[in-house]
Image (cartoon, rainbow, N blue to C red):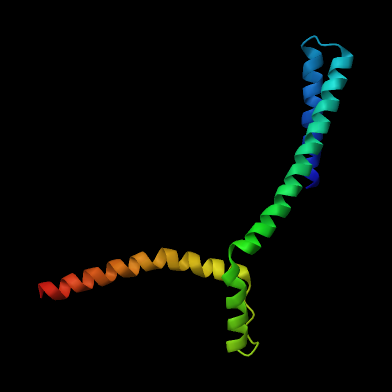
Length: 115
């Protein structure tokens, strides 16, 4: 995080000096520095707002996840407490494996029919 902020300030300073080297006045160079700095603040604010909204959408996008977490905890009598990410990974694994299993079943079915 500190490195990103440092690089942002270096970029702003470089743009100001570049504007100055192209023949703009010193005031224009400082104005460019101020504008870029203000734009960076605006981008940071928008990014924080976006991250907050995305977290709320992620929580509401999978309403059944919370119910499944409670069911697993109830069925295991509190010994297992999965997180929402655990179910996301399970869905990913199933999305990858189910077509493969279907292909294997088709292959076995054709092999038995040919024999």
